[in-house]
Image: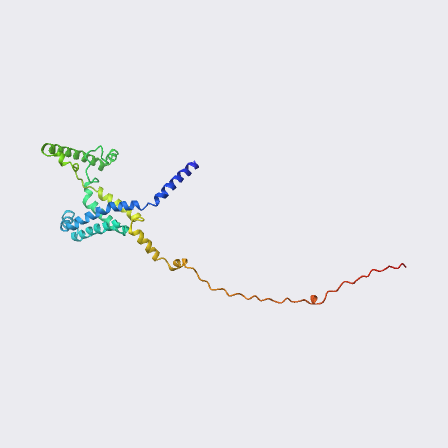
Length: 267
């Protein structure tokens, strides 16, 4: 079992260590996906500013419609440019998320989830939830049956009285449900950018953040790279003390008595 775990983590760490070097690509793709959507929505509101303010007042009954129109228009415009260049992405995500929440609850909530109504209950993504008894999913399934009947009736009328092949040459007809699907999807993607940031290598945030953090480093940290010049140490004079001679050592050592060998007389 230990061998299996070692093999697994050998592959895991080897593969995902390489992928971690490319972790700036997913935020880049999310930004490139969201940026044109926000820019297009903001430009449309800017070019139809009076109609946008009137719609906010009469259609949604929002207070201060002109102020709200300015806020939502420039939030989408400025936010779209910031997402495109990867500048202040975390800060830009917050007002855009608020705009998506306002749109979801004030414009799309009553229409359910789907932005485009499914025309077949068999292929509807609400079917698994309807099978377990979710009431909203059951209502969506019934709505899909009605949508399918209307689309089939429209095809019959157009085939009889119109050029149906020419009409669907650029795409099939669909029923716009205008639910919260798109607003919720954009909110989730913006939430992801709020946590991940703009990403490495492909954003202005990455390079500006590195330069700014280097600039605000404490001086003590910056001076670590500089060689330290220490003062030259002065040579220490060593005092040598003269050996003190003891009294015993000052007198010459007594020589041992010399013994002379001579004949020994017998008594």
